[in-house]
Image 1 (spheres, rainbow, N blue to C red):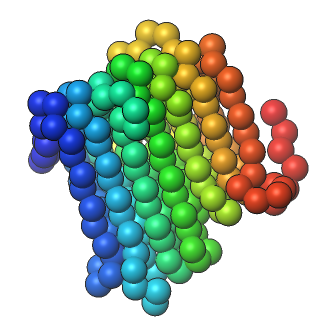
Image 2: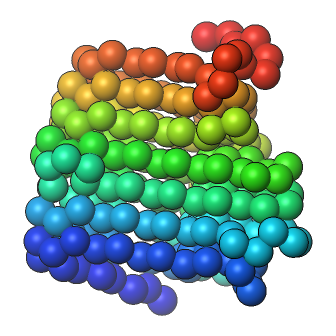
Length: 219
């Protein structure tokens, strides 16, 4: 079970709205999105303000089929942009399984989650184990949880993806070295399980979306 979208240099945009569904965008099994020198944008919205709505869910049913999502671009400028909005208790950008995001040239990567209810903005290990790998050669890497959490969580249930849940940023995969500047933004930064590993010779900034963090941070 799998699907691929290959544009060979053209831009790719995938948009969904959880207006009358549980998820704006959802992946199952093996998914490959490769734009070559084109930019990639994933936009999962939740226009319906009632109920629980997830913006983007990576890795649904990892219990029945291991989930691996590969998203790659060699574009300059904003190479890969992933945006999710959630309502109620659901998450804006929810990661179960493995998600590999790679900018192989000078392009930037941004993951922006905005939980408008009680959910989490960006979470690896949302239900099953979740591994988020965000790799770039030199472009900026931004994880923006806005007023809610950028989080690595302990799984609720074991699936087929081995744990622990973790976020890896900068160097990794096909990126043998990284000079990327990294920005982690969110009023709550919560790192359980395998936590977060950042490997880059660039600058690393951890900052709240508002005027202060919700609780003290320890490194």
